[in-house]
Length: 230
Image 1 (cartoon, rainbow, N blue to C red):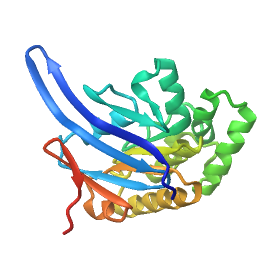
Image 2: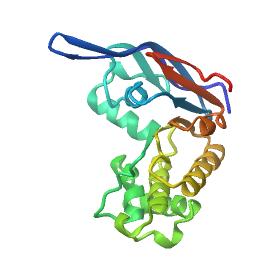
Image 3: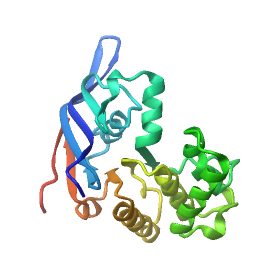
């Protein structure tokens, strides 16, 4: 891990407004993520963890504050530039895999590269290499409906990493799996973190899992703070 900052937010705030009703989620959140670092964010249901992740990934707009991804401030980019930055510098893993049902595993994993303009043959070759690395070499041409839950999530991990992004954002990425399969997928993410050097920011309800990462943070009453030791 180097000291290079790949993800940086300063004074981040989010308030939802509906008519005269204003509901603050959090305010003045600061977070820096170094290259190759793994960070967990825990908190009670409704604390705003997913909202924070969406802001970090440029999928939602903050009420105040700024998010920089590999040194580029999201707020100063056009929609097109922001989309290109997300495609090149960020990967996303969700609790539900969000694979495209009509495409095979290799086609799903190749998709971010194809969107970036990589030739089909090159994109699928990269996808095949990564799917082989995550143990799915025998499932390359299978569609999501033909894969088990653990296989689908490993495929989603491969898709998030195929562009070799600076940072992967995961929203309860093992939350929909049984305990044994979740442990396998989580261990795989850590191995790929070490091999590729991609940073991981994972939202999780599992405090034990959070404490195995380089840094564990807790979102409480709108404040992001280090997770207290047991």
